[in-house]
Structure formats: C-alpha cells, structure tokens
Length: 466
Image 1 (cartoon, rainbow, N blue to C red):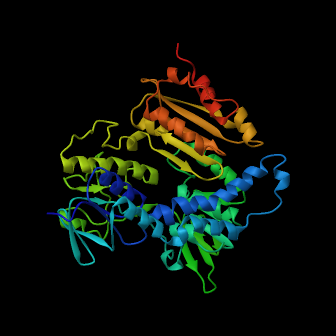
Image 2 (cartoon, helix red, strand yellow):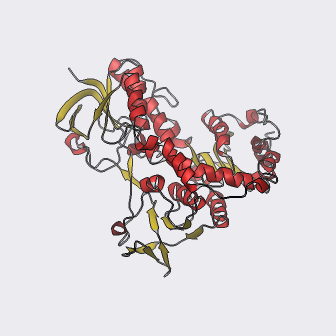
Image 3 (cartoon, rainbow, N blue to C red):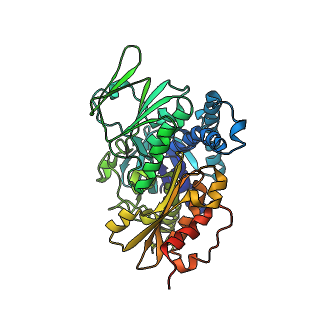
C-alpha cells in the first residue's frame, strides 16, 4: 500500500497543474510545499513583475497619442503602483491558493521534502510513499561570481519584484528578460537606472529585438551599457554600492540587482538516494519522466527544457495525464503532439518580454533554424508601416519577422517587436504548432485596420507560391 498515487514536490503554478490533471483522472494526490502555495510566479516573478510594468506601459501609450498626451500631466504614483503590485501577490499570503487545493481534493503537506528512496519521500521526519513522484521545485536566482557582490547584499529577482520602496538609483547586471523588464519597471517608477550586459540585450532572440529595446530604454533615460562586465562590487558604510566595470569605469547606486541566470533548485532533494546528482538539472523524456526511472518525473524549470511558467504548465498537463495513464494501465499517446507529451517545448514555445517595446516571439529564430539544418528564409517588415499600428501610437516603432521552412512551406518562427504586440502572439503560435501551409495562410484575412495586417505584409514580402 502507498499513501498516495502521486506526490508532487512543489506547489507552484506548475506543480498545481500536475496535481490537478492527475487528480482529475482519478489519482489520489498530495503536494508538498516549503514556502507559499502558488510559487515563484505568483509572488516573485510573473504576476508582480508585470504589475510593476503595466502602469508605465499605459502612461507611455497615452503620451504617444495626440489629444491623450495633453491630458497626461503628471508622473506615475509609485506608491499606488507598488500597492497594486502587492495586491496581485495577496500581500504574500497563500490562503486563497490553499483553499483552491482543498476545493480540488488535493492534499497539502507543509514542509521540506527529500527523496529517500524509490517512490518514497520524507517531510520533516514523516515518510510518505507513492506510485509516482513529481519534482516541480523550479529554479533559483543564480548570483554571478563577481568579487564583493554577495557581501554587497544585492537584489535578486525576488527583491526586484517585491521591494517596498523605489531606490534613488539602481544598477541592473544582466541584459536578459528579467534584467530588461526590471530595469524598465524601476525606471518608470522614478529610479535612475543603469543596465550593464556582457553582450547585447535579449540574446537568443532575433538581433533586432535587443537593438530596438536598447534604443527605447536609452530614450527613456536608462543608461544601457553593453559589452562590459562588473569586476568588483562594494557597499560602503552609508549603504551606497560602487560597481567597477572592466572598461575602467565605476557606477555608484543605491542598490544593485543581479539578473544573470537561474540554477536548478535540486541541491537538497535527496536525489543521490536514487542514483541522481544533487544540485543538477533533471533530464526527462517528452512525458517528463526522468531518464533511467519509471516513477520519477521532473516538470517545469527543473528539467531545463524551457524556463517559462506557461510552458511549465503545458508540460504539467501532459505529465499529469501521462502519470495517470501509466498508473492506471491505460494507453499512452507519446507520438508528437499526442496527449501525453510536451512536443511544443522543442520548437514552438511562445514568449513575451514585457519591455517597452514588447518582444513577442514563438518558434525558432533564423539562426537557430539554420543550426538545426533547416532550409529557411526569413523576411522582415516595419510594423510602423501598418495602418493599425499607426492608429495605435503616433510615430509607432516596431518590426516583425517571419522564418519559413522552404522545404515544407510552413512558418517555423515569428518575432514581433513593438507596443502592444503581446496579444498578437497566439495566432503565430497556432500557425507554427498547426504547421499551416503558407498557401493556406493567404486565406487568413486580417481585419482592417488592425496590427494583424502585418501577416499579409510579411506574406507579400515573402512572395506568393506559383
């Protein structure tokens, strides 16, 4: 006998979905959580960061419209923005999330879980057994190895989304998604922000995305420095932080925020008790089953496939269904795009970076597609030339590109950069996941005058098949 069919270690958004989908299939399920039910996304990442950004986006959008701009005469009320941010975290209390677990019939075990053997875990001295265990512990903020940085009490992404007041000045180390978003947010709230990045901004995306975001950040008053690294960080007795860069310059700020990557949250899970390596990412197949096991699953950031909450929740839906099917002996559908696999992780994952301009992308960049050996052609078009974009903002600046697999005649990548492009991304995601032929896309007529007319212009730039 086992205590549960499934035990999920980690009650964040991804863990909740694994538990929910498995329970809906008839499994008895418990989740273990050492912190707040709802996890990183609810309290320190997705929700609070976007709440910090949204008011600034709305204000700048109004200022880009003749007539509306004249009505906007003040700056953001930083205290009101911070209060709104806090409302989305429920003041860092998880009663509502706990109530949802209870209503769903999923047991909650508070405490720190350690795997003690096959299908067995221990939580604060109590042993539980299960038919399957899912590790959904996410990832941790990774502090770069810069002399003096740790001693300078830097902000990580948690502090960057939960701070209770606006610093007079802030240095952001890192030009990725978290760094650019948090630099944008705190600058809009009144902080004097400097951002330093080893290379350009938003590496791994189409090059024009980082370039347009960097231009806009500089125009907004952010001191963006690329191609530089911090070599030393010191906080003095007055609380000021001095950061020395490898170009010989120094930056003095009230706070320093490190946003340079994530590490697996697996160091104290007892993985070594089942022949795995503590502190490492967990390798999985497309059903999220950990390699070399028939009972252990790893879902979300911890498997290092795609470190995005929505993609983790997608994995969770597949994993919950797959776990139930295996335990109940029902057929598994593991063919690509089947019910029990996360096929979209490989080449169809959507992502939005909520800078200003926004960056919305899905699928492969042109460079990544070529690295995979695909015969591709990419086309670009200026979003500002679309009638719908011109109506959206005076002097609209933005760009879109489309990456086409020439051999199959389907879209394999799309990137949009501009104000309000996030809501355009789902159509591109559907086109890529559905492998819709280009000749059929010509019949998907965009409503006029909307920014979705970019689809027609990209198709015209590519050229209609004979």
